[in-house]
Image 1 (cartoon, one colour):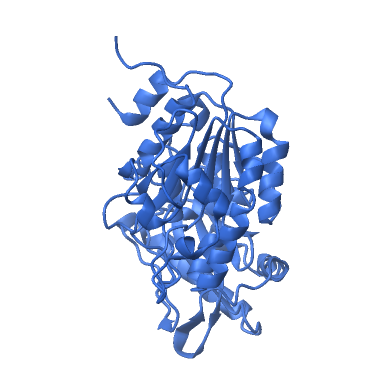
Image 2: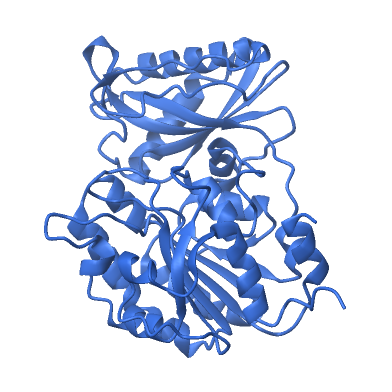
Length: 402
């Protein structure tokens, strides 16, 4: 029997509350002083919680595979990301409120700094302010409305990010990214990954070139990169599978988009960490399941800023007592992947997690950290199995068989 179908068949409704607190990119690697960002952070509340919890490591996709944020979160929501794959483009597009119809192709865009010889100097254009990015999107909307009979719709995101939706006949999302994926390298153009992707690749490359021409006078954001091309997915919906009223509390469009795709209700929470936990508290009576997403651990890790990532972890630790005052029946704290600041990128390393409920066999873990969790009672398990544990601890799974 399929894993999800088994959970669907066993899921029952009750009044218990589940919180999944995701610190994006939580896992790290040791700095020269020998500790990761999580291990070096002052986290008295998470450490105490870990001592009363079951702990372990989550393999987000499979051994040695570096996950994107989409596969990582799908795993946390109970979907095997090796079976269900949602492209980053549609996550971003739906997250910013775009209407996406069957046959459309969506992409996640970065404004970037483009140098001589088509060298990409800065893939994020210095993380320009959101208001500046919105101004540039408005400017492009006036110039780029269609390419080769394909309608082009642009949507501003947060900081340097934006989304674009291509609508027209003959489109296919099986194309490669228009992005070198690294700075100091020449532009890499999109190419078809299937014969039917030829037109889409041409449209994408024409769009990027037109953006470059339009923004030639901009100091930082004088070009763009596109990646994660994808259309509408077919995926079982969260409420149907688990019989829970589910809320997504996140600041970034991509994670709102993913939540909407799987059937969660997005609750607006502003841009701050404090806003996330204020929204959790104000929404408490209306939902059974709460996905709370902290983005800034990941972005600081991608910036290669060890101290800033550690500081975000410490700030989140300060809100843990507020979460516990709500008395969730199940609380899980983890990441969707590792983003070690010493790498400045996602990595394949499993993510530490703790699971607290009245029904755990506590590990007595001395702290919440990667190496402590590696010795935890849960060992290393696939992330998509975590949802079954959460449901079981919440009393939301019936017995299997006679």
